[in-house]
Each structure stands twice: as structure tokens, then as C-alpha cells.
Length: 357
Image (spheres, rainbow, N blue to C red):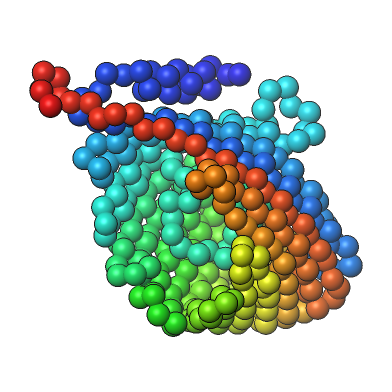
């Protein structure tokens, strides 16, 4: 365990033991084990077949005051099963401040990705990407309206320029108009700037990648819950080293979900152009979405049979799924199992020094 990792542990311990004034201390831990097996032989993406099997432990501690402010420190400990590492596969910090009121929320620092409320789908972020990149490094602001309505904007700084690392940052935005009736609508958007290293090689390009997804949907049902969503995907991408201007792939997506008792039967159909035209050159460094949205045959259909429930006072969550992927060439399958535990304890409020309560 390196010195910087021990420093984070010491900070957590000191924060938990501090004699703070008129504030509430909290401490908790998140635990997740995730199994994701992908078998894509026979499709255009046979090379993407692989198995992700990992476990994560995230101890955290912090301070809350005035019921709106939170200052927190955490350490994200990740182990990929079978990777042969001496200690852990990865150790990363979370250090953030969050302000949360009924209609406004803002965060700064390195904070959990789940702080965002937007439904950034598989065209934006593959589920494995979200698991391994579960932090936002930057700032975020949200406005919350009536019902489930909201709009948010965030900046995620993913790469600091150095001789080995490209400068890389992403703008994220989403909005939803949902007053609790049948109909709802909204959008999701990302804008990625993928630049060069500080000592660039001759073949390093600079890429700008915009993807926007406006959508409308309807939720209804009594014994069964139905959710039908129709969306439009539009991208604008430019590789400046190629000097051939912008490319603008586009397509439509229809999603249908039926659920009850935690069980879900869903189907997502995408019809359109290859949304990842620069994949052969930049791969996953540029594209965080599901690779099937790069299908050259203009169609990608995913069928899901899933189960998701939480138990024991919302402390234990179980999620399982079986997925069938058809990309116009063949049929691939994937299986998912995830177990999540969340525990948190909040201390009693402390008074200002010398103040009687």
C-alpha cells in the first residue's frame, strides 16, 4: 500500500475522530460484487467478448451541517478477480463537498457518479464503464422542479495532460420533464474533448465528440408497469488530424419495458448509422458506450430478462440479468449478477463550543 493511500486512510480516521462544532459526523461503507460475462461470438464484436468479475469496498466518512452541506472523504478499493495483483487492482480517493436543498443540488471535487440524476443510456456509457469509472472529477449543478423533473450540468475532467496522458474532459447534461402523469420527455447530452499529450506523437489527433439524445415516453399500467420510450440519437464528431470535417451519424431508438415484483422484460431497438466511426483509431479511449452502437449493419436489438430488488431496509441490493444482443450479423449473449450492500451511521449533532442546548 503506497504512502498516498495510507494518507487517505489517516484522513478518514482523523475526520471521524474530530471534535466538530454543531455538526453531525457520519460514517459508512459501500460494498459491491459484480459478475458480467459477455459472449459475442458470431457478431461484429466478437473481440469484445470477455468476463468482468470484480469486487469493490468504499469506506467513507464526513460531516453534515445545516442539513444541506456535506463534506466527505472516501477510499475506493477495487479488486478484479484473478488479476494476480499483490494488494489491490486499484485504489482511488473520493473527496467532495455537496450542497443539497429541495430544489438545488451542487457538488465539487471527486464525487460518486450516482450524484447525477440523468439516465445516460448504453449509447453514452456501457455498464462496465460505469462500474469501473464510478467517479466524477469536477463540478456538478442540478435544478429540481415539480415531480421528478430536473435539469443538470456537470464537467468531468478525465485526463490531465502529461507526457503519457492525453488531456480529456467531458461535459454532461440531462433534463427530464415528469410531473407524475403518463407522459414524460427529456434529453441527455455529452460533449467530449479528447486532446493530445504534452509531448505528442505525429499520429496523435484531437477529437471533439458530441452526442445528444432527446426522447419522449409514457408510463402506465396497474397490475404491470409499462414504460415505452422513443428517442433520437445525433452525434457530431471531428478528428482534426484527418482534416475531413465533421461526421454526423444519427439514428432512432425504441425502448419497451414491462415490470412487476422486481422482474423486468425489456427490449431496446436501435436503427441508424454507426455511432462510433473512429473506433478503429481510438477505441474505448474515445467511446465509452456499448460497442454494439457501432454496428455497420444499421440495426442493434437488445432483449433483457432482469430482476432487481433491495432488502433489509434498503441495505442489500440484488440485480441479475440475461441479455440477448443482435447486431444484424449474429446473436450474442451476456449475463449479469450484482450484489450491493450500503451501510451508514450518523452521529448525534454536536453543539458549538460553549453553547448550551
